[in-house]
Image (tube, rainbow, N blue to C red; front, side, top):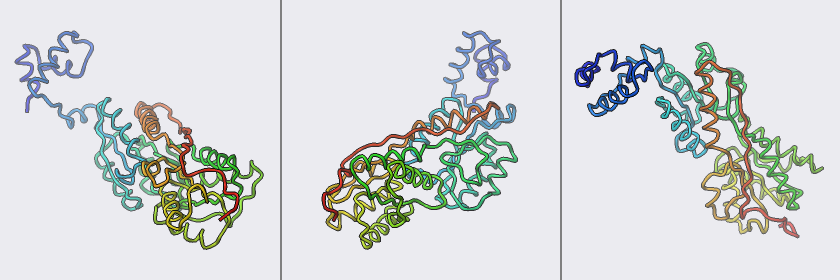
Length: 339
């Protein structure tokens, strides 16, 4: 390992001068700084992060806890966070919750043990009003940004989230504008704030259009393709006479669309289907899905902006970013005769 004194000997300067030059101190001439940094690079010098952390009381580490890297909702958010963190000299430590509360807590505690300077967390939603590990983060006064909507157990933290209520209302209004009057809604997990917001957006848009919100048109569908399939089979058995189905996310919508097509129905000839999220599977589904495009990259950028404010001891506020409807082939005017 190359040491500062070895660089100093080759450069013909003091160890203190080398140290200041590598830390970009202004009391060292620009030309000298550049010459020493180039020499250090040529000699293969790697800064001792542990020693630097002891001096600055910072580890230059940021923790990120998400369900999984395979979750397409978080892939672009993570990319934006990591890119900016890299520019600023931070390394990102990753933990997976896999959608399990116990796994989330273990991942957070491991990151706390690594003394990260800040945390990004996509919370695992639960009905519990409090969480010991989130309370621990608060006690430590550790900068933390919630990726998504806040549950009651993480209400005190700064968050970045999509304005799901407005986006869901917009897609309901779009279906109404096509002439649909009976729109079924396939809900997400009851504990998830994003699912509650999307359902409320649907309800608000119907009320604005003077259309009733009918319990018979509401189906609990969860969040997966399989759950979308199960809800659709129940929907078909009940013959609700709906001309459109609005799903709480794209995976549910894929399960809905696949089941309807397998039953011989046409999209949108017999029934229209919408999703939410704009996952890749929505665009390349058998009938490309009308959906809502979430601003995933912009959410990641906003999360990092909030984190930097917190790291500097500045005030950061929660942010809600707008989303937009992407109209594709799965929606159209209702059939003249309901099938």
